[in-house]
Length: 310
Length: 302
Image (cartoon, rainbow over all chains, first blue to last red; front, side, top):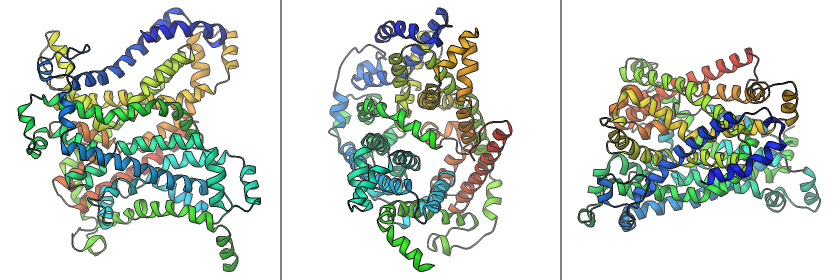
């Protein structure tokens, strides 16, 4: 409904204005809109279905009554998971990784990008070349695993923070952005006797706020979505991030349940496994859905700066 | 000479201080693991460590070339990557062209917003949604049942796995991949369309004469990069979607390395050798694709 309303409102003025529309035929427009609207539905419906399912109850799920219209609204799946210690621990781990990880990401990336955006000091080219090389080659899984082991990062929450402290692609975007800031801005601060650190903090970062917001959101989403380092390095199940726990729940449901047998309540309530899984899916995806409007506002600019660089 | 270099370094000491965390990161987490590729030529002994383990020459490579599962994974990786270039690569261009044909900035924005969202959702979550959709009691089977068709086990069927891989990746990433083309299209001077229209070009001819040339260069570069990535095969997606039932068509080199090292335990040496083998092929492919695109008159990477 919303789509067609926007359509009618928007089509006319633009059609009159843009020359490129003049050659268009009505039939082609209808086909294009139909295709895009169907694709948009196909993108949204799976999320919607999962959402409904998580608020459903066992009767509705096992009778396969959950399609598009909510027949019941039942919070029992959420009631259960928010009482489950393993789930709560995983949420805490993920929150830690997101907050600490993003902070480290920004600290390292912004300082590094600022220095690499400048020229004239010895060593810049070599460092840049070594960084770009890592985009095309790495040691592979086993050397990575053994290195983390030697650095005592197994069963250590920092393994989800430090090895991912810099994303080279985001670093390049930051460098490209810093280069667009006029040099005159920092020269006046330098004349007043500020050193490079003070210039970065007082002059550069305030101008770079939109870019900082963009990259910060990108990093936050990446850290929230952490699961792989958890799967690889956490033998202690209490340290698994939320999405690693979700993965276990999806692939190994029975085993996860038996490992939390301390919680007998599950056997008593009629919780359909699918409901429970979908509730965890919703909790894992919800923060990103909430951040998305902000993210969406900026990412086009980010991709554009990145593409100029590439 | 050294004195003046020392002076230079001192002059820029604050810059070096600010660069230190970045350099430490790349040294510790990117370059330190690289020396581990030595393991490809060693037999790993847990106690001896990487440096202390004995050299075995090319033994690991010979061992891996004899493994039937390795060749299966190798073949699957190549087929999946080719399929991605054939199906997924043009899908993003098509979507960008379609969105661009929509009149009205707000509606364009609306479609972009919808199609880009799944990009930010991890493959773990997507796999949960897909399992729910494709499972034996999933939505698709319910729809099939409503039409009187019999139930199909989509997720464990080797014949369907690759189609699921392509479709789910298009579903997740096509909107994101289209952005870069839309950005290039947004930079086109509207007068070009005006001129084409004056010359009597219809909408499709305008698309071929004005829009397509403006994104051809971008498409070329992205094609080089995806060919150079051909041996990677998207580990996150496969690892979260596959199961032993579909190893014959879905196991890729990266998932095979993971299992051979951590599940089957066929030795870290052989697993490292596979990784190195893969990286070497990727390098060769990147180089070849870059060369080919340049020969065809496109812009290369370097």
